[in-house]
Length: 360
Image (cartoon, rainbow, N blue to C red; front, side):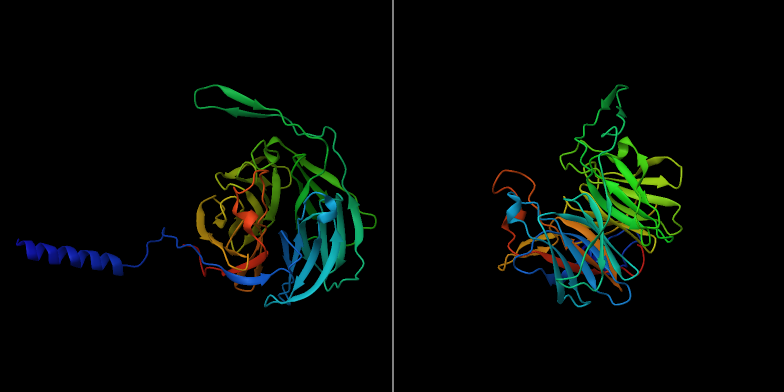
C-alpha cells in the first residue's frame, strides 16, 4: 500500500469516527444560563422552592457574616422569568431549607432553630408563623463510626457536638409529613401533619453515625429526597461527599454514592437524583444505582459586574417546567484572604439549565 493511500484511509477512518453518534456512556456537560440576579444588598442564596403551578421561584439566604448586625437575610420571590416580585426581611438569622406546599412556604430558620411558615404569595409585611423549635438532643452526638481499612486495621470516629440543632434540609411526603435533617447532631426529624398541626411536634426518626461528619466541610446530613414511591429516603452528607440511602420505614442506612464533595441540596426528578456538589461547582445527576448520568455547569470565572459565570458553590435546585434552577451560594469558607473565588463575588445569582430529555 502506498503512503498516500494509507494516509487517505486513515483520514477516512478519522472522519467516520467523528461523524459517529455518541455512545450510550458519553456525557456532555449541560450548560447553564442566567436566571436572576439578587438585589444588590442581598447575598448567599442557599435554598430554593417552586410553585409548580405558576413557576414562581422562592429563595432563602444564608448570610452568616460577623458581626451579626451586618447580616441581611431575606426570603425572595421571583416570577417564572426571574423578575423579582417580593422580598421579606428575616434579619440576622440565616435560612437553610425551604419548601412549597399548598400555597404556603415552609422555612427552616437555621439561626433561630425554628420551622416557620409564610404565605407563598408573601410581600414585605406578610406575617411569618413559628411552627416548631428544635432543641439539643441527648446525647448531642450520634454513635461512633467504625471504618475498616484495606490492611485489616480499623479506625473509630467519635463525634463531638455542642448540641446546636443545625436544621438544614427538608422534604414533604405525599401525606404531608415533613422530614428535616440535622447536620451537626447527625439526625433526621419527622413532623407529622406539618401543614395542619397546631402545635406541631418533632419526632427524632433517626440518629446514625453516617449522618455526621468530621470532614473539612463541617455539615453532615443535608439535602433530603424521596424516591418515586417513597420507599427510600435519600440523604446527602456534605462533609463526607456521600449520598446515603435509607429504606423506609425501618431499614438500614447505607452509602449509595461516594466522591460527590460538598453534596448539598438534593432533588429526585424523573428517576434521577440531582445533587448540588458545592465544592466542585457542578450539579450531578445519579441514577438509583449511584452511577453518574449527567453533569451540569462549571465555574467559568467572575463577570465584570461581580456575578459568577456558571456555577459557584451551588447549594440547591428546583425544577421549573423543562429546566432546573440552581442557587449559587458563593460562600467563602476559609479565614484566609485571597484563596477563594467566592471572595470576588459582588452580586449573587440564580442560574438555570435545560433538563435532558432522557438518561444517557
